[in-house]
Length: 454
Image (tube, rainbow, N blue to C red):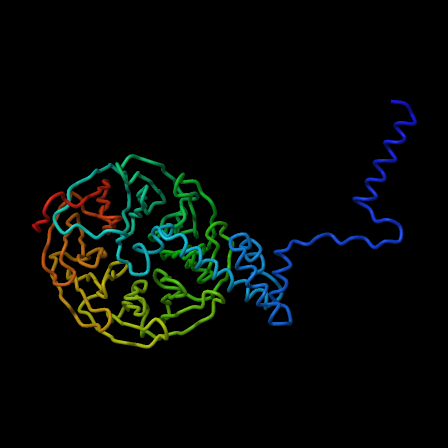
């Protein structure tokens, strides 16, 4: 290449740079294009209502593409942006929940707001048959040790060990040990392959497929209640913070509510309810974190609230009062004082009925709408674990003895025994029943052929 040709190439490159990168003499510099989603976020605080409404509609249509920007906008200095971004995130969570369906695998304590411990098909009416069993070196069983799902069943050991087994055959999947000698303090929630664990050092989330740690939230005094998941949002109780809402995928905080939560959180749709240490039951607005209503219970709740038929919340108070409260407005519907406290982590509800196990060895089934006692039976044991309940049946037990009764009448159906002094609360997934007996995890199926109680 000669000197004139090289000089021509240089002139060409400079000219191209002037055209594409630099303004010509006397012309205004072209503005750098802005992120269109960021522009819409800015319009959430526009003076004109039409502009605000248009921005909200456009962001909602973008769906999950806008989630990252909306999460960042929650920390905006502009009050209007913060408020509307939080409300839009809540809408996205609701849409995600509706679209996901079974994605909300085990969305809270005992599977969700009813605390039934049953997902999918009902419990076996006849004595179940053993499908498989596997040895598990468990040091400390908790009531909610078993988290079932379609592909895997997860076992929690209080000392900080999490194990996964395949649902179909019980073969070992993965094992994860929490860092820093953290202990598991309550049962976990599972959704979208995210296992959210409350621990003595905060909140930990694992990938349910691999057991790999994804994100955590440190807390000086830990988290001592089961979290709840709705859509792509996690609600957790943290002792030094209060109630915190977080993004399920990233763990980024959405809002904090300063309070002293007591017991597992109840979440369904727009409903978010928690008990408090100072003896209140509070419904919280999921968009803002502010109170919708607050009810004085006369004592701290002994366990988290349970939802019955979508609009009745039943809560057991430490003064042995069982109370029914309307979810929509917090109105007290009924109160019933029981003969004994309960050492269980939760009640269970199905078909409008509520089952509660007592430290006196009785199981009681109560009408959730009226508080009327339907039936009670003496198990012959004290300190019963929590019940597992379907529309037709209720299963409960302790010390390795598991009993099944008709949920409507209390009539005995079957009983089974295992050589163990401890067991988890039974949990059922699509008709298969899972129980952790001390050092053995067992899976049971309904028997083939006619079902005959025994």
